[in-house]
Length: 245
Ligand code: SF4
Ligand code: SF4
Image 1 (cartoon, rainbow, N blue to C red):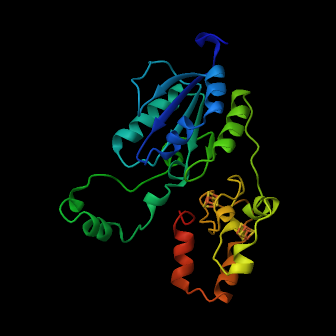
Image 2 (cartoon, rainbow, N blue to C red):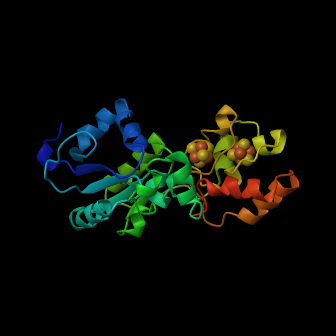
Image 3 (cartoon, rainbow, N blue to C red):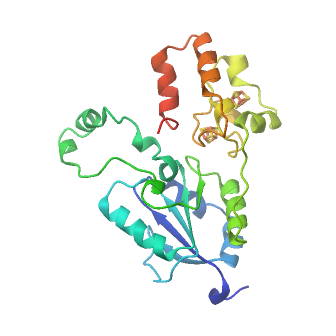
């Protein structure tokens, strides 16, 4: 086993979020032991006080909704070699960044007593506040995908990630196509692969949390949805969950 002095230092930071991505990391099981053999965890802000050491790799989950979080990120940027946004909230703002126009209305509806008094700013991705070296999308992240990316980063190399649609992973699993054979509005044809077709593999259409791959043809899929009989509002809502940021 390497001593803590010669292992790269890893920091795990949670901003405004459900902490689901950090939770996925703690659930890495045997891979977690392998990871801890090659890195030293210097920060885990949801569970332990900081060691005060600067991280080589900072994994940041969650959206930025507080001035304190933006200040924290600027300090982190000066110390960390790599900042990696993990999870869709950190990468694009995620589910919490929905409803630009209706936000106040929703806050009043859900929190009638206190909704008006919230001081949080509109959720922003980490990359809106500081330069990010790499993004690992997913709601939550896919453990194998994260380990793949960390393997590259620990060698000082930018990770190679799939630039093809989720449908390819879905086909490789031998799944029946939910779009073609069950008429379900799956976003797989325009969503970046990497999750292993989590939802289609259990009979649910993809919601697009990995975001688009390069050259994804959204208009073609919108046209297919129209021909399937989906209304314009339904189509907009399909893309609104994760895509339109
Ligand atoms: S179920 Fe969805 S992801 Fe799978 S092949 Fe069909 S459209 Fe693509
Ligand atoms: S199937 Fe789609 S929504 Fe589900 S995890 Fe994969 S990319 Fe995200």
